Length: 75
Image 1 (cartoon, one colour):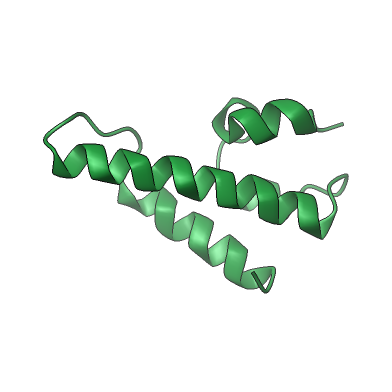
Image 2 (cartoon, rainbow, N blue to C red):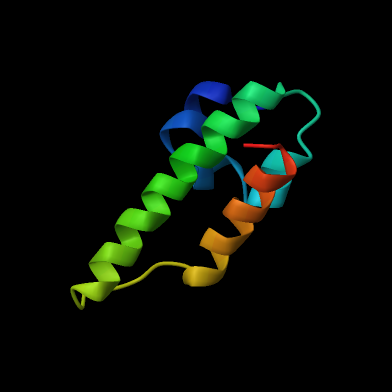
């Protein structure tokens, strides 16, 4: 069972990639969207940090994967 509270605080602590969120059978569509949106927000902050010459985590590919998962949910 997915730890929804933990996933909402830090999606990367629960999921390795956005597609795992998309395919989690124990989460509602709304929960998946909320987790993915929070993940997107975190990644966008990381992108801003990169633009300011700070270190970057997993790269821009993860943001595209998050957006793809959100699109597939109609969000």
